Image (cartoon, rainbow, N blue to C red; front, side, top):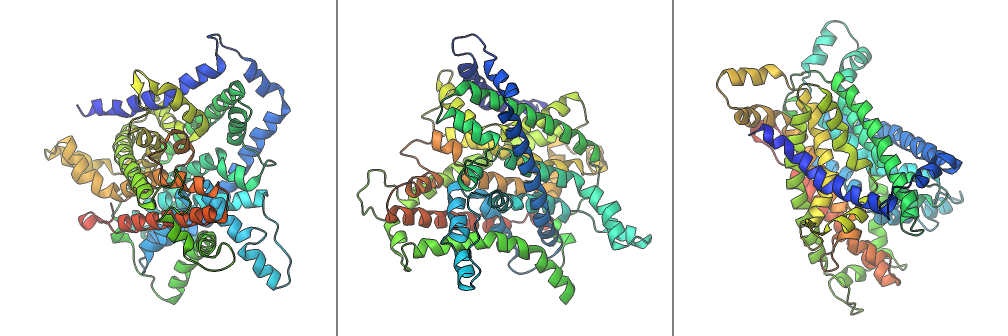
Length: 547
């Protein structure tokens, strides 16, 4: 019975990933029922596409390296120390991950634009202007802004559960701090670091909104090109060929990585996070702890505070009129949506996404954490494939494939949670897998010898130990759903808009009142997410810490 559960993730992927994808690709590459290879020949014969692949890969690699440099010190601090305001600060670092691209563009424009806060400060000092709009530098900064929380959550979660006696034993044998880090701690952390780096690389490799809005037409990635070919040019064959090439490239990276990760993971005596964390012992340790999060906080808070200020001061003077306008309909617009309704819609979709992704992700993680074999080596990258697939292609596939029997779900309230789960459950898998592979197998064997059933072993041995990683997966599923924009814009019913869709409508409309309302709604989205993250951070599972 338990083994039969392993079929659920495969059935889910088959119905809601491969079926819509196959439908849209068949429509694009074989519109008359006959396959044409002309779009693929175009990819291999035109130098433009080779340069496109090179730039996409290069900017993803640089973005990943910069994100590691910013995120690792904060991951260390959150993993090792207790201090006041920790849960709030960790919630703040996660907020960027949920924000729709258009909100991030507005935040960075408020901070770094021609009339932004930074240029006003530089002008006051007589230093001229910083010209960052539509530059690669701004794209890289925005990528770090978005993805630093991945490093903090995935690496910090695993790091917090490492038994400190491992490092103490190395010190007792004469190893210094640097040697202990290089030869003991770093090799143990490598599976979680690789998992987090992979996620960041995938997000930046498939980056769409950040590059399109902040980078401009000069800096085009494969995902932007897919959108350009599919929507403005309506060249679906080339867009489909690019989507297939992107998926093949992504699958190859995932397969190579998962092989390395499976070999690098070793059984460990993991401990609950609360038992390994301590208050900073003295002034210098406290200084190190705060410096670990200072850079990340500046990067995260500066655009968010600029956005908050702009929501009150758009138009030149401070006012509450944009927030007040959200609760009325001064223009008597037919498309007006009360903010409470948009918040409710987003929370309902996010709640369904968390439930589905936690069930599917937990089953998938247990399946992949078993004895290595050919099947698991294929399934591991397969479960990650949705993250490397064009959102534009998938959105079109849902519209085409799920609008008629046997899966007529276009009017179903579960369509959005299903679409969001497709992207969210790989986060749960990557969050759980390093912890599950690090569990000492003797604990399970001892429990089974004492008569515990498999379900009891999972409930009383595994879950208390990996509870923190499970919480990380839940937080990521929640954030992905709350901020998902691309697929939602295509699939959401007009009468059931989520907060990102409402923000997009308002910021894209003419008039300073609409712009102000869009900024105000963006601040409400940040507040809702911050409150949700803070609430989740305070959960504990008995004496085993966070779950």
